[in-house]
Amino acid sequence: MTIDVHPEFGVELVLATPYIYWLHKNDKLDKIICCKDMKPFYYFCDDIEEKYTERSIHNELAGLSTLPNSWLHHNSMANFGKDYGDLTEKEQVMANGTLDYSQWTPPPLKQRHKNDRFIFDKPIVVINNSFNIEAGSKPTRYFSIECLYEMFTYLTDYTIIYRRPTNKELPTIDQNEANTIGALGEIEDNVEGIGLINDYQLTEYFDHVILFDELHQKNGDLSYNEFQCMLYANCDKFISYVGGGGILSSYFGGTNIMWTSRGKEVRDGYLDKNSYYHKLSDCKVIPIFDKEKTYPHRIENYHELLETIRSEF
Image (tube, rainbow, N blue to C red; front, side, top):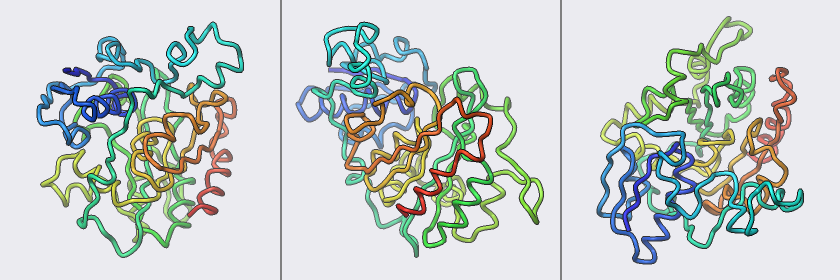
C-alpha cells in the first residue's frame, strides 16, 4: 500500500504515522509520499518520496480521507457506530480525543533516536512554546515572559532547551504558520532591571538555558527533524502546549506537562487515559487546563502549570 499525505505536522503524527507504522509491522506498506524531512519519523520504510514542501490544514486535500482515522479529535463512527452529533452526552465525553486503535501503532521514536551526542552536564528539560495564528485568531496557546521567567528561575538543576519556532526554519509549514510570518509581533514584556524584552532575549540571562535553533546551528550536519528527534530522544521531561508541541513530546516517554487553554482539547474527557496523547508512547502526560473563558487574564492562569512543574520536576 502507498500512503500519500501532507497534513499539519501534529495531525500527521497522530493520524498518519501510527497507521503507516502499523502497515509496516503487518507487511502491508509499500511506499510513503510525504513532506520534506519526514524520514526520521519513517525510518522503517525504504521507499519514501519527500514530495511536499507545504502542508494543508484541509483534511481531504491533505490525504487524510484514506486513513482509518481521518479526524484528529475523535472517531465516533468506529467506536460507537454513529456520528458524533448522534451520541449521548456521556458517549461524547468517552469519544473525545479517542481514536480507532485497531490499526494504530506509533513507532518507537525514542528507542530509534536515542544517542550519545546530546548529553549535557545536567538532565534536559525541553520547553515547547508557540506563537501562531490559531484558526484565524490571535495566539492564545503560548507561555508569557513572566511564565518563562518563573520556569527558567526554578529549573536550575536542568539544562533547558527552549524551542519556539518562528516558522521560517521549519522544513514545511501549513497555512496558519505561513500566515503568522510577518503578521505578529513578539512574545515580550517588561522585566524588572532589564526593560522590554522578548522570549529569545530572555534566554541570554540564564546560563542553563539554550535556544533550540542555536543548538541546531551548531549541529548543522543534521536535518531539522533529525536534530529534533535526537534531542527529544535524550530528554525525559517536557513542558508543552496542547497541539503540535505536546504531540511530538508525548512520543518520547518521560513526563510531559501540557498546558491546555483552548480548542476541542478542553472538552470533557479529551485528555483522559484513552486519549491518543497517552498512547503515543509510555509518556506520563499531565494536562493542565486553563480554559478559554478565563482570557484575557493570562498571567494569573499559569499558577497551576508552575505548581505542577515544581511538584513533578
